Length: 636
Image 1 (cartoon, rainbow, N blue to C red):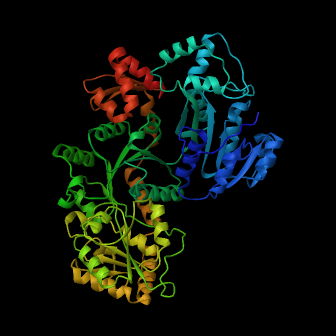
Image 2: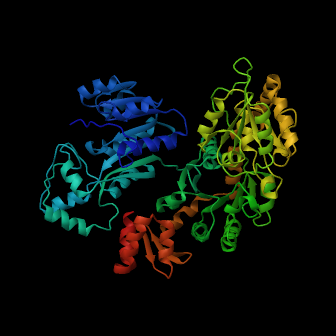
Image 3: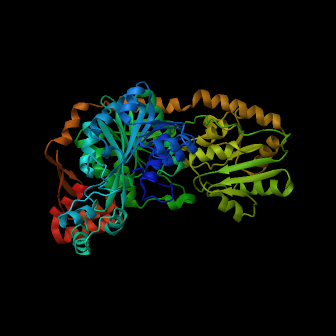
């Protein structure tokens, strides 16, 4: 039968939402060409098309195909095999299999054919029902295996998969699994949804038996897979938070550039997403900002098996000024942080000033400069015809020292209330408001959304205040780059790093950190639209020439060259051998990971796992010992 669904992206326990999130993460803001196999009436594909993507569909059911053709760019009525036979040269960025592969007699063959229909960096998303769900186990305990009109035992299913057998399917078809999403449903919900007519006695029994099994209530596994990177260098980048602009600026945008221009492969993970299969897959592991004992231990394991570790940092976190005291580390944390820097095979930084600081700790430091790319958005408008009012923009992801700027802004606002607006993005708004300055403010947004905000402004001037501490001198001038490419002239403190990059009077203004200097510079730019236009145009040309993302991509290739990756060492992780992860001892072989508990295993598990999973494993550790923990970790 044809499945009908609505799209609710607020429901994260849903295969459509997981697929949409995968596409959003992988697209990096680009519009993609998508093939929706088994598109039904075009619900998911229609959502993606409305998001700007090009979506073609394949659907067996004639009525559903007709309805989908009214929603999608085009729909082929027939099987996926027939479609590929008739469109042998068609290529896509994404091929979607929404609960489709289980309906195909030979899904391995279809996945192999998909290799020829994926663009460079293309990927597959496939959702598959989990036949090992606890509800199916309860049915089997009753001695039944009965098909239904929908669900896991849909009578049209030709193949059945657990998570492991589905992983094997992709691996045999020469795909690397980059991520796995899961839809969790309790037995009682699956019983009603799929009309299984389960006996309550067996429901209760199975619920008790599988209470600690992480996959027992998985209704669907959703796989994100890419063709294997046979000859490409593979990078796994771990970051504190993929929602922060720092992740996009320092990691995602430059590594995406490197990946597309040097034929590499990259996976991006939060620190909460450290997965065994990534450790096998990667050649280079990038750790952004976070140090500590766990990272030190993980680096040791990876390096023992021939992997290379890069520590990426964008600030002089070892010398934090007093006004950023909330970022200061305890002595123990600082010591372990310095150990991580020293342990890394290579350290990457944003500026040469910062690189020079860490050469004292690690002799292998490469500057990967922050760079910026034109967003493709219209430039901010500098025009007296639209309005004579000037918008002064202050933006920061942290509490930059603005005590010398606040009096200047208050003076401007009091003297020229009709001529200037003040727009603040991020934490500096708190201080400026407390100073009595009237502002329009925005919370922190992604780097992409930040560029959109700037693009929509009229007569903007970027204000970039900075103190003259050693910490601040090692920062990157990324805001200058972003403002420049948005068509905004800037006024910066006359201290490094801005004094290293901004040409005073040509690509921006450099001013001393006193009230009169800031007031004079603001009024000078505010009085002349021609001057604003000239500075903005000069800055655009300068940044495009010297600080395009290609510069950052080339720097990452320098990192790769310096590390001299040798693929022969990949086999180390597949041989049975024991190694030490700090105070956690593990034995690895081709079948999985065997663990031997030592004194602080609970602490390691607490660092590695979510609170819910940790609590379950800790109970298992106390009642069943390490063998019980191992059995459950094998299923993750």
